[in-house]
Image (cartoon, rainbow, N blue to C red):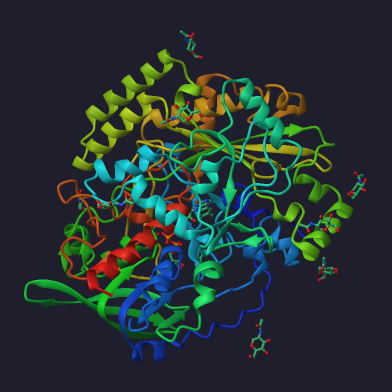
Length: 638
Ligand SMILES: Cc1cc2nc3c(=O)[nH]c(=O)nc-3n(C[C@H](O)[C@H](O)[C@H](O)COP(=O)(O)OP(=O)(O)OC[C@H]3O[C@@H](n4cnc5c(N)ncnc54)[C@H](O)[C@@H]3O)c2cc1C
Ligand SMILES: *[C@@H]1O[C@H](CO)[C@@H](O)[C@H](O)[C@H]1NC(C)=O
Ligand SMILES: *[C@@H]1O[C@H](CO)[C@@H](O)[C@H](O)[C@H]1NC(C)=O
Ligand SMILES: *[C@@H]1O[C@H](CO)[C@@H](O)[C@H](O)[C@H]1NC(C)=O
Ligand SMILES: *[C@@H]1O[C@H](CO)[C@@H](O)[C@H](O)[C@H]1NC(C)=O
Ligand SMILES: *[C@@H]1O[C@H](CO)[C@@H](O)[C@H](O)[C@H]1NC(C)=O
Ligand SMILES: *[C@@H]1O[C@H](CO)[C@@H](O)[C@H](O)[C@H]1NC(C)=O
Ligand SMILES: *[C@@H]1O[C@H](CO)[C@@H](O)[C@H](O)[C@H]1NC(C)=O
Ligand SMILES: *[C@@H]1O[C@H](CO)[C@@H](O)[C@H](O)[C@H]1NC(C)=O
Ligand SMILES: *[C@@H]1O[C@H](CO)[C@@H](O)[C@H](O)[C@H]1NC(C)=O
Ligand SMILES: *[C@@H]1O[C@H](CO)[C@@H](O)[C@H](O)[C@H]1NC(C)=O
């Protein structure tokens, strides 16, 4: 039997014992791809660093104009049709290997955090896609839009005209090839509003599960019983409460829809687009011209050689929120004292690069359920069932291999705490913030976050039910489980990502600084306690047989706090490290995504998002890149 290592399980990096990579046949390189030396000889209008989520969106949109030439540089390889990437559940089984994408150097940068001061010194895994398609190759495929107030904040709180919910929703529609749900949860409706809010002609297929496990609907009914309603339309500006989530899966093929097969493969033949894979971009080249700092191109390495590619118009950085700051710092753009300490000549002192790192910390708990129920554990427990499902998947792309966790939603903090607990958490928070030296950016963020929390309408912790064991504890043969995921959506802690060496092959120092404020611990601890209540509420409660992790003995606030501090991980949504906001607030890019102080460098990736959003972020990253392409076209009149 292959070992079933479900992508989202591994993505949480808790059951992180991924077997060493089985040999995967190298895929043929696309016709757009050129060798490193040939790429260096081309002269491009635009160079895009990183062929990931946002890089491929930009490449597609900018090359719509045949007069414009674009070159993309990507460290990973082009892997079209790879089962490990594209099969939603158990891709390793379909590929008949014991490999996984996460924790595998052929797909993943495999970063680690620095030792975390508030997690008893532990180190957290930070998977990041290293493949054409970037992190959309690795992600859990959950497809969401944030609530209106959260997008509107980007425009109003951070001084970015043109960045409201209404401004971005058109871009969501442009991305999507949406398919209405065919299977519904109790209380769920397919409304005209839901249908009209979605696009149907875009490159990314968005669909819903066509098959549910035996725990999904009972989980919804149990939540409904404790005043958490079903939300039939999470995408129109109010994503609070539980829903059957949409996901980036093509319902016809039953495969992942991601930046590579959605945005890139269909346009491979464009003569004005070139891609070079397997190269590491190490430096942006600058010249000073009439008092301006102008990027002329980039340097990159492959097989021990260094090459230079030139850009006539712009260099666009789309290397992701953890790698774009590194490249800027290696190029002399960043905190002057840091750069000087490493002997890097300072091109531009922009000390907020790499600061303001925010993410969604996550804590899990698992429960044993009646072993007769259909959960994903059956794939491990019953070989006949697994073979049957494999045959079904291969025959017509249906069955359990197309499943992704269906129960998803964000609850206001007030769902889990009463007013007096809320007030005391807030008092502790305000005292802690007042005693810290906070940046101007933190001051406006904290004010906005406190308003949002007090409003009690927006999601503060997000829940997902993974109908499977094996994420936290080792499953017993023949048993069935659910694992509940509690994601903190609006942390107050702030981290950073910086280089500590001039070696471009080294990982940057990633410090999410999780749980540095008591509030952040309390949100997760109360969320977990709410989950325990939920899982013991009928009808879900009738199916749950035991608390496994943590066991019954964890019950006091102090014990939950200890549990949170010893198990918290990342949901892999790092943002904010090159924030889009005003210069007064320490912005790195302006509302047109141009780096302050540089003439022709833009950043288009998750790093520009100035503050946390209450959802998973891939849809937003695609939308930012779609909007960015329009901004570039406007600025160059192309
Ligand atoms: C494990 C995991 C699970 C997730 N789950 C979800 C989910 O379920 N739903 C959701 O909405 N979001 C999810 N996300 C988040 C979402 O996928 C990412 O936020 C988004 O894809 C990031 O896009 P990006 O363009 O910023 O960076 P990326 O897509 O990571 O692209 C960056 C690209 O740049 C390349 N690169 C970097 N540095 C260099 C260099 N120096 N030289 C050459 N190339 C370079 C990288 O190899 C990569 O291909 C998840 C992310 C991960 C990692
Ligand atoms: C790769 O290309 C070769 C030669 O063009 C071809 O024979 C082969 O079938 C291709 N393989 C795949 C996986 O596309
Ligand atoms: C997987 O590979 C093994 C040996 O490599 C083989 O015996 C088995 O039949 C294969 N299974 C499937 C489902 O292809
Ligand atoms: C903290 O880490 C130390 C060393 O790894 C370990 O001995 C100790 O038990 C941990 N404490 C908690 C509360 O997890
Ligand atoms: C988007 O923002 C711009 C600039 O603020 C505004 O003029 C435009 O009307 C907005 N578009 C939509 C669809 O809201
Ligand atoms: C979102 O909808 C819920 C009901 O599903 C409602 O209670 C809440 O007030 C709404 N939030 C906003 C911001 O309108
Ligand atoms: C810049 O780096 C120095 C030295 O590492 C540090 O003391 C300072 O706080 C940094 N500035 C910012 C804005 O982060
Ligand atoms: C295993 O699965 C097969 C096919 O679904 C089913 O017929 C059989 O009863 C199952 N066996 C057990 C022990 O549940
Ligand atoms: C797939 O095949 C199975 C078995 O033949 C059938 O029951 C099912 O309806 C088919 N599903 C689709 C989506 O065609
Ligand atoms: C609020 O919740 C706390 C913790 O559960 C409890 O101790 C307290 O009695 C509750 N207060 C009110 C007014 O219900
Ligand atoms: C950079 O930090 C890493 C991790 O802390 C460490 O292993 C490495 O030695 C440091 N490199 C330098 C040049 O300081």
